[in-house]
Structures are given as structure tokens and as C-alpha cells.
Length: 489
View 1 (tube, rainbow, N blue to C red):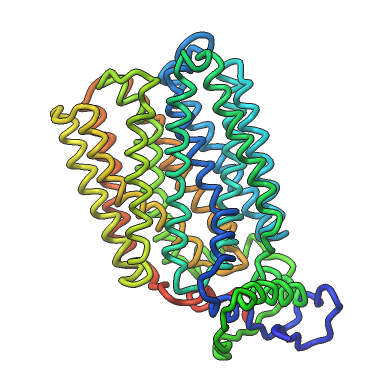
View 2: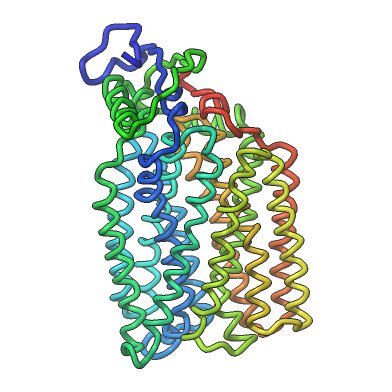
């Protein structure tokens, strides 16, 4: 038996407060990379593809939404973007708390269901108010997904590849962004579909994709680490044994279990909020500082620039709304390649070094690109090429923020910690960014837009310093080594 209870246990769940000796994490970390991990990434990591699809569609369809009958102003565009982000913050906090309390698997079904219903409903919007309400609900579903999915993936992937895997999954946002760009190119062509219906069909497609993913996730198991902590000892053992059998059936020989990595925990039904915030503000205050700096900087940087990129192309370069998708495609490509190509270095060179580098170089490149924008060096193609370079590094930096907050807090509060940092980062940096940049772009002044770029660069530079000095060297370590469980006995 892989997980031994030291007091009498019921067949399904041991009494709360029972001390158990478990090797669940050691068994998961010893697994070779295999088909199981690929399937987990596809079924769960698709969340970021959906988010990228949503964000890009909303940005690319600006031209259609500004025409009759919707007649959105530039402020309305910023308001809709902020509504989505406010929904994401709300969903992350509410669903994050539930994810730690009732399990990862239940929540990644509930949140995906909310997303697919709300995004399809967006296609039925009749004015700015209904559009913002549906965008809020769509964001709530995506925000909840972030917490449930990040924690699940962290707890199923071997420690030696956790950094690269997490960065690639978060970077897959840009696969969705590319898909959204292609959809917008097709659906905004008047010779293909009536422009008044094209943008609606785009959101209907998002709902259809969500439904397909809902079915794909049916085989994903609950996190064995969560099961063991909450007293479901036999179920945790069954899940890990089932995963191990997948590998042995494929011809893999599993290495011996490292007995030194066994650990004892006292089972619990939930973690009180007082302990959650006590851990974050006292026991893990250094990790909290780092998490906040990284999340706020990347949220402002990303959301401010990306949500208003279409506005910049139209206002300053005269790019028609139906052509914006062509410029977003290479932009998305550079942003996806960053995490893929740099991710391995977070597991080899180290977390602190790579966080400092990616955030720092992003700050420098943003400042330089902003200045060149101000003096009108670029045309639309040159501007896009510059953003490809900037976001090659910035995308890896942003993904590293999610990796950091997910792995440096104990299992019992992991999902809620992700939610809190996502909420604060998005609430402070993400919501304010699109509103600020929307207003700056609307002035038509390149000098004003440069101010916004300067703020983004300063935040990224500050995060580089904080992460480089106080970040956690988590590379190659099990989650329990990086952050001792609160229930440790």
C-alpha cells in the first residue's frame, strides 16, 4: 500500500486529523515523460488556448463592433476588455477557494461549462451593456480555469520538467491568439459572411470548442496529492497506480521509489481562510512579495498592450479592422516561441536567473520600441516585427509568473494562492492597463502612448529585480521540497 494511515481508517476516507505516511509525490515525480503527460497538457492546457482565442477575437473584432448596429466607441472597447478581466478576477477568487476545498477535477468541469455558455451568449449581445455582462461571465469561467488547471498540472507533472511544461502551457495562449486572428480574417470578410453576423459567429465557435474540450477532460483524474491531504487514501493510491500502469503497459520500467521523499501529513477537510492569509502574509511573505511583483507587472504589460494593439494599428497606421488579424498572427507566433524555446532554461539554469533575465530584457526592449514608435521609425509591419521580439521574452516572463505562484505555496492553499495573485495582478495591472491605454490611444498622441509604455517598462524592471533577488530556486525539486505542506506532521 503506497499510503499508510497510522490510525484506523474507513474504506473511503480516513477521519480528519489522521496522520498518514505517503509516497504519492515521490511516485509521480519518478515517472518518465510519456503519453499520459501529453494528454494532460492537451486536455487541461487548452484553457490558455481558449483564453487566447477570446482575447484575440475581442481585439480583432473591434472594427466590426464599432460599426452599426453595435457602434462601440474606443472607450467602450476598453470597458469591454476590463469587464472580461474583472470577471476573471471574480471567478479566480471564488472558484480558487472552491478548488482547494472540494477538489481540482470538479472545478475544471464547472468553470469550463460556464465559459462555453457565456462565450456563446456573447454572440447574442445587443448593446454595450449586454456585451459587457457576457464578457464578465466568460472571464469568470476563464479565471476559475486558471486556478483549477494550474494547480492540477503542477501536481501531476514530474519535478524535473515542471518549469518547461508550465511555461509552454501558459504560452499556448498564443496558439489561441493565432486561431482568433485567422477566424477574424475570415469572419470579417464581407464576401464570406455578413459583417453584422461575422463577429457573432466567432463567439459561437468559441463555445463549440469549449464543448469539445469538456468531453476531452472526462478521463483526467483528480490530483492524488489533493486526495491524500483530504483523507482519500485508497483513492489516491488507485489514481497513482492507474497512472503507473499506463507507463508499464507502454513498456517503461519505473525506477525504485525514493523512500527519502516520503512524507507525513495530518489529513484535513479544508484550510481556514485565517491560515491561508496567515501563510501568505507571514510564513511566506517573501514569496508573496515576489508573486505580486511578477503578476502585476506582466498583467499590466500584457493586457495594456495586447487589448489595445488593434486600436494602435487602426489609429496610428490606418490598418482596416478586417486586416488586423494578419498583424496579430506573427505577433502570436513570437509570443508562443518564447516559452517553448526558453522554458528548458528555467529547469536548467534556474528560476531566479531566468526570471530576472526575461523580465529585465522585456523592460529594455519595451522602452526602446516605445521610443521608436514615438519618433515614427516603424510602419505597421516594422511595428509588428518589433513586438514579436519584445513578446518573445515577455511571454516567457509572464508564464514564469504563474509558475512561480503555483509552486512556491503549499498544496492546501495552492489554488487560492494562484487566484489571489491572479486577482491582484489582473485587478491592479490588467484592468487598469486597457482603460489607461485605451484613453491614451484615443488622444491620438504618440507622446501620450509612450507614457504608457514607460509605465509598463518600469513595472517589468522592478519585477526583474525582485524576482532575481528573492525568487525561489525551485528547479528540479518536488513541490513538497519547494513548499512544505501545511498539513505536514
